[in-house]
Image 1 (tube, helix red, strand yellow):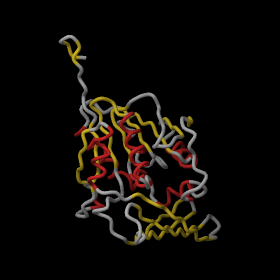
Image 2 (image 1 turned 90 degrees about the vertical axis):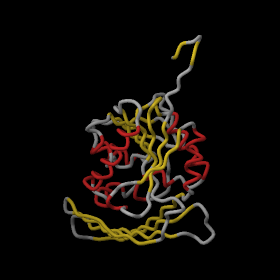
Image 3 (image 1 turned 45 degrees about the vertical axis):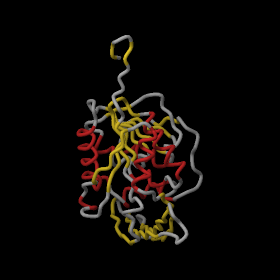
Amino acid sequence: MTTKADSREPDHGPRLYRDLADWYPLLTPVADYAEEAAVYQQVFRRHCRRQPLTLLDLGSGGGHNAAHLKATLACTLVDVAPAMLALSSRINPECEHVLGDMRSIRLGRVFDCVLVHDAVSYMASRSDLESAIRTAFEHTALGGVAMFQPDFVSETFAPGVETGGSDAAGRGLRYLEWRWRHETSDETYVTDMAYLLRNETGATQVIHDRHVMGLFSRAFWLELIAAAGFDPLAIPFEHGSYSNTGHEMFLGLRPVELQTDEGGCT
C-alpha cells in the first residue's frame, strides 16, 4: 500500500524513474544489491546506540536495498516518483510505501535507522542537501543513526564511463553511463545515460536520459550533518565495487539527549 504524505511530485526529470521505471530492474537487478545492503546493515548495528528495529529509506527508488534489509528491519520506504514506488510495492509488498520528497516530508514519527543512499546525489544545490539532511534528523530516534551515501564528494569525483545491463522475461537492457562536469560548475556533475532497450518481440530502441547530480566537499557534508543536530562521522564505504577508490559514507549519530529535571534524568 502506498500513501501520500507530500505533494511535491516531479513531472519532469530523469525518465528512468518515470516512464522507464519498469526497465529499472534490468539496469540494476535486485540481487546486485545484496553486498551493499549487508554493508548498510553492518554499519547500523555498529553505530546505532539503540536496538535497530525500524528503518526509514528516503529516496528508496525501486526498493532494491529494502528487498534485502526487510528481513531484519521494519522498513518504511519514501520516494518522490510514483512509478518507482509502484515497482517497489511489487518487490516489497510487506513494506510501508509513502509518496514524498526527502527535502520536505514529515511523517510525525521517528526510526532507529534512516537510510539516504545514492538518491541523495540528486540534491544538486546546497539548500536541497541541507533540507534532506534536516529531514533525516527529524526522523531519527534518540540514539539512532542516519546514513548518507552519495556517489561522490568533490575530492573523489572522476569523470568516466561505465556499461552494464541484464536480461529477464524476454526483455533486455544495456546502458552506457558517461559522467562529466561542466568547466563552469563547482558543485554539480552530469551523468548522461544511453539505454538500449529490447522488448519481447525483439524490437529495440535507444533512449538518452540526463541526470544532474550534486557534488560537495567532504567538509561541507560534515558541516551540514553537524548543523542539523547530529554527531557527524565519515567512514569508508567497504564495497567490492569501490575498493581502493576512497569512497565514503557519512553518518549522523543522533545523541541520546538526557535532560535533568530537579536532579533526575528523563
